[in-house]
Amino acid sequence: MSIIVQKFGGTSVANTERLRNVADIVTSTYKQGNDVVVVVSAQGDTTDDLIEKAAEINENPSKREMDVLLHTGEQISMSLLAMAIEKMGYPVVSLTGWQAGMETDRNYGGARIKRVAADRIRSELDRKRIVIVAGFQGINREGDITTLGRGGSDTSAVAIAATLGADLCQIYTDVDGVYTADPRIVKDARKLDAITYDEMLELASLGAQVLHNRSVEMAKKYNVDLEVVSSFTRNPGTKVKEGSNVEKMIVSGVARDNDCARVAIINLEDTPGVAFKVFSLLAKHKVNVDIILQSVGRDNKKSITFTIPEQNAEMVQALLEENKEMLGFEALSVNTHVAKVSVVGAGMASNPGVASKMFEALAGANINIRMISTSEIKISVLINEDDSEAAVKAIHEKFFSN
Ligand code: ADP
Ligand code: ASP
Ligand code: MG
Image (cartoon, rainbow, N blue to C red; front, side):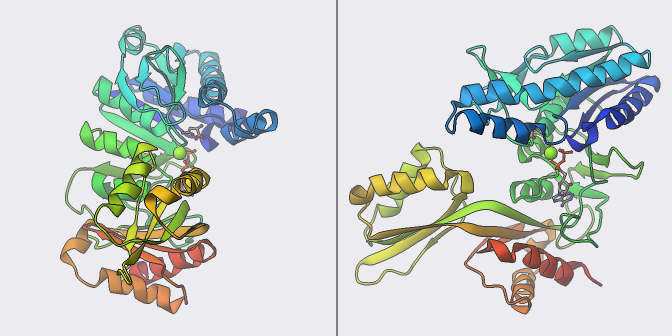
């Protein structure tokens, strides 16, 4: 007998028919003699609809109240799924995040799971019940409801799997695995049988939304056996696992992130400590800075350009303007119409020429590169947002067409 955690995303639980389909998958796993914990997302576009509703009533609601609102979506799916399973005659119980012991830090809207106090889940499993847990939500030390950030249900599932020492954590979604690029953009993207944690973590962090990046981070840390599968087909999915370059590919995927912004601080003093002043100010305000570029100094002046998440753009612009005198710059430019396109692959460290191949693809598509950043296993470029689909297609074609 095994412990299996199965997570179902928004499309998979979108309506009655799909909930019945999920109930079939869950009960057949249970019938095989397994302990089954199910994690669900909100149905379809529920979370987006709730965000719109909030904006109608208050354009700047507190993060606490946003979490109280947003966590309701998952609660609807968990109870409906429990009812579908009840109707089939199986023992089942649904639990909210706090009932399931999902303890988080206090960071509303982007909370991190600190611990899963899984006594309740364990005792329900001991009673031979199928346990359904609302994804994406937890409770902080103040006893307030928190949410984990968009796409966070994957992380709820992996946290539960890690805590229970589950034999398998399956992420059921609307594609049948992890592809070499988003199959909605690249029609001939190839499904991967397996991918390493490190490569998957890069892809997820660089915009491939198929897995929440923190879920991959956690799966790697606790060595959770993770699998991405379709809830609509019975095709084999993609295994995410330890290992070096499991498919022996130089590049395993192309990712795109449209949610970034480029900030240029023009003509700062070219003296020691200036970069420290800029980036410590951003760090104090918890802004995640990604690619950083500093121009060659001239006439005792230099410029610093960097990228940040698009949702921080307005705040960062205001913050820098407020501190213009202290930082001593001449002008500021913030552009939100940019996108980051990346290639990821564990094999590129030992294979020269990947960057030039990527740049050749972009040149062929007449796409201008604004910034470049590299690491051992990825190369990212910043380009105009309007070019991003064409860029993904051209780069994919260059690396994956035979
Ligand atoms: P869920 O609601 O099940 O969590 P998501 O929408 O969060 O589903 O993630 C699945 C989507 O991720 C797919 O529909 C696909 O368009 C997108 N996606 C982006 N990059 C990739 C990739 N490399 N492989 C597979 N899917 C990807
Ligand atoms: N319902 C949440 C969202 O739409 C969490 C999730 O789907 O994982 O972001
Ligand atoms: Mg998701």
